[in-house]
Image (cartoon, rainbow, N blue to C red; front, side, top):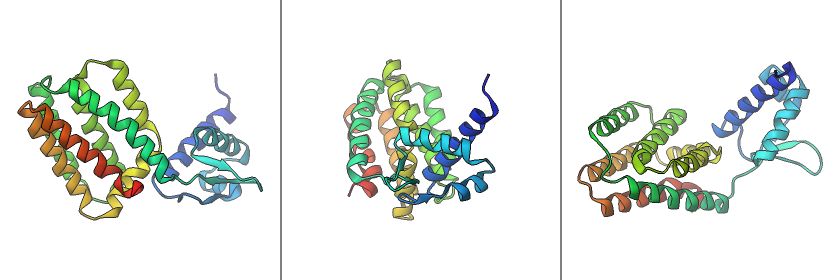
Amino acid sequence: MQNDESTLAETAESAVRNLIADGRIEPGAMLVQTTLADRLGVSRTPLREALNRLVDDGLVERRASGGYRVRPVTAAEVAEVHEVRAHLELLAIEHSVGRHGRIDFAVFEDLLDEHEALAPDDVDGQFDCNRRFHRAVIAPCGNSYLLATIDRLWDHPVHRRITRAYVEADPGNAARMIEEHRAIVAALRHGDAALVLELSRAHLDDGYAPLTS
């Protein structure tokens, strides 16, 4: 059984992770432990443990002079994440084309309608709908290891930052994302593998562009 300190550390870790991923604590910002502990309602001991865990995850860094700060995400790092995700997801898409059934297309339509109803600046909602759409596209690929690997990539906090950067870069980007999703679904309906891959590749490139250009 976990002790209270360990439970508090996990709670604090999750809270700080979300604050960073959602942009409420900016990249490069110093994490003042007394202020942050008061904000989260925990003591400094579990908070320090939480911050050390986030250091191990690469989300936070220790300063040589002492203290912690949010580690900025470099364009090179985003480009690396993009490269890996694009290769894996396009492979999964290639194996999925022609395997979607009536229920799958009904799920696509529900997801697209749900996404369309969101406010463009609802970053959490935009991220969630986008992730569920992409997961639905590759679900029939038949390779559980490939799916699990892509899921782990999505779990990386950098993806929430990428979504935030994308929807904030242009007020029309949220609608553009949905339009691109609809085009991918239309190509899937026709079983046009080449077009699905072309549209998906362009869609992935577009989504990462605000943090790589």
